[in-house]
Length: 357
Image 1 (cartoon, rainbow, N blue to C red):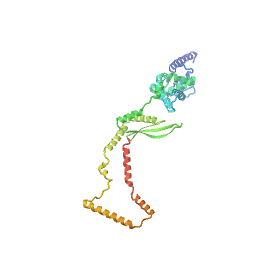
Image 2: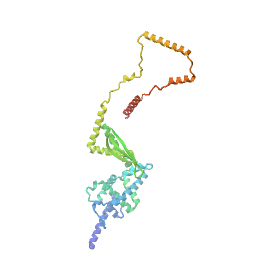
Image 3: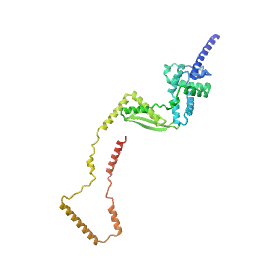
Image 4: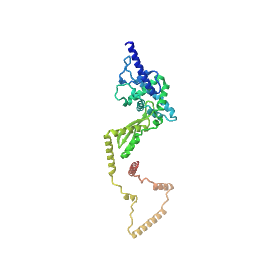
């Protein structure tokens, strides 16, 4: 290579760097110092580039660094912005802000996608690639100008100008309410069943939930609260309702079988009139007035004879009188009808179950 060729190549590199610096200035809000970090951050592995030693040259290492920095920086910003909020709220808010989807949208809005060097098709529609590039740029900012520069970029450029942190924090994509609305409209029974409760590797509580519609298993979800797990399970169930016709068929088949069983009587209705008087003990009644008079006279004679016999009989000792009174009050001959009690318990349980809902 002669001297003129070297000058032309340097001039071209300088012009390319100058244009990239200008574009980065518009995106980041400041001029880069060491442009090489940003070039690597914008190089996808599909480009096939290699360094002087033949090793792959791409943004994966910077992506790793940027991911860790975003957790720390955004966590710090959320912590300061929402004073007094609990750990779960802060974690969820940070997760929404640094999610792959959110970072991908930011990369597209900021024009980062247009600068990515890759051989992949449709870069503008690849939010995964765009989100990775955003993380890699954050790593490049840290290597170029330090942690404070990353904090300024996220606080003043992103959260102050492009993202409403309050709306992100309190926005909830309520898949659960959408699912409940669908089940009520179609008059099908739906329940959220807790599958398990445990802890992750950091000791935080986790919950597993499943959606069950008319006895048919729907989506499953995991989360750091039952509410979060229900949202995940509801979202998966809604996706199945959209994509799997056989899932909907199974639900309405189960509903049809349930409603058919509810409409068919399983036993004859009880005879309430018969049950009204079954507690009355039947008595034998004299049929004529003469028989009534004769019965009364017989009772008088029996009482008179008993009184005469008691007058001449020896009196029992006091202890014998007490024992006789105890025997007279004894309830041993009155047995508890256990079978009847079980039947009452069964009826009571059945009524409670029938009116539970």
